[in-house]
Length: 432
Image (cartoon, rainbow, N blue to C red; front, side, top):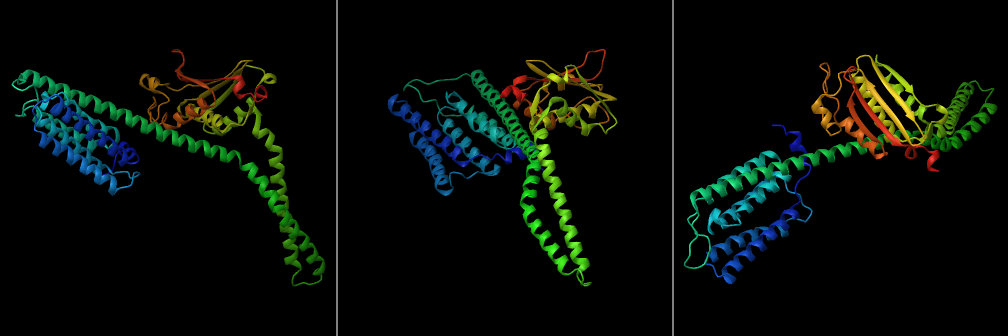
């Protein structure tokens, strides 16, 4: 049986044993304090020996876990289910002998269930909440009275008992569902951000290859020059020797070829360093758009502002990947054409990407940019608008951009994405 993606994420976020141990010590001290206050300060009659025995059992198990495992140990879902199940049964047993659902601490039954739903796979958490439901049902029929003033007995009407049962059950179910949703979304977000970092590192690596080429050319230049000198000397000495003449000439020609290649690499790096590291906005946009022109969709670039006043940007891998992903998505869903509008003024830089596809469906439009949102109105394509768009949006927002996703006017079908920066954030001249 294969694990679901949600369960896989929970397996990667196993509960640390020390966290559970500290929570259990808190429970031990809280239960101990409550029992002693009721028995010795309020002087209410209660089964003291049984209560202390149950608390001691929890303390012994907790102490064993502390000495048996290191503090960094992470427990598997089966073990976590067993420990949380033990905590639940111990608490319910303590409540059973002290009044059942009439005990004002009965709501604490929800705690192990909430912890499970926040940190464990859904199948174990579902089993635990079923056990908890059975336990609170048994608590409703507890024959033991609530510890109270001697001579007085607290009688809880059946309707009130049922109301308390419903209250605890509904609180448990709501809190468990809420904890599960929050934990699942946090896990998805963490995975998506990790993927974003990997993409950004890859883009930065690619942009640094020109520097590596220059370093290689520099390091290999000296030994190749030595080989070339030696080859010339050998050619001069052995030019009349038919046995080695062709081999020496080949050696010299190949060493010269290697030097030419390295010279071109160094030249490309030196010439390209300036325009690759810092380039005008129009050049950056053309570089981003170029890979997407070969897919049968026309891409029109509309420049609303004069080039002579355009910003010059530092080469930013996050911006280039983010805009490239948005344009790729527009090309994927366009029927015939994508329009990229570039405009800038003294204060802002704006880029608008429009396609003539079906646009965003209403449910997607409200959730756009979330990780793992994977549907858009197009029957002949599966997927889209998932993790890639989340990564693009995250990278662009890190650069200081604000993004607006919307559908075009009702008369014109298609989607529109507006990306806008304060000019000072991407204009290399304005940051000096």
